[in-house]
Length: 204
Image (cartoon, rainbow, N blue to C red; front, side, top):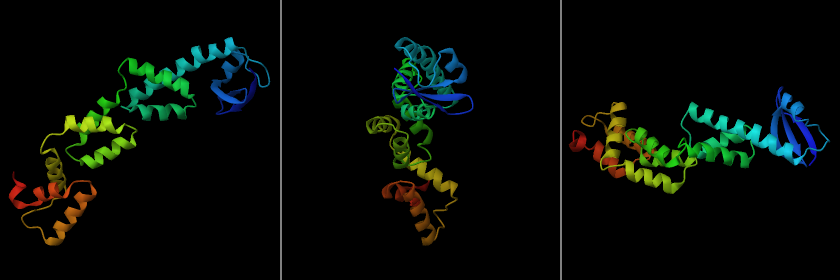
């Protein structure tokens, strides 16, 4: 194997290419330590040592740090690790590592996400946001089924209407049309909106 290119990434880090393909990022001191020099050979033993003792350890710690900062889906974590210039095989290993401790689980994430937002957002809006986070549709569907009970969407609509200071008893036709449009754009169904907006159901 030949070190075909060493490209500066920052003032302290360098991208190393072996046989024309990106291999890993090393600090300047590590380049010296492992004698990584452009145009020179690198042994299989040194290559594996760098990957297993340096890069793999680094990507695992990075994954743990990112999860400690905030709750993330698997896809969100993968995206952040890719930004750190880790290869897909290293990322796969890091993902498996944090999963083994239960630190990342999309189904649990989806349930927490639904429960924390179901009283202020529509199912459609929550579903769309979870899709954007890279969670599988079947996982989202299961979370919705487990977290939603009859009347949950009506409660969310009531809270939004109250926040808008809408008065169902004295509202004009124009005000009603405006609140209908607002709630529809939030993803709530016409029937659910109608149930809340109707005066007879307001204090239900």
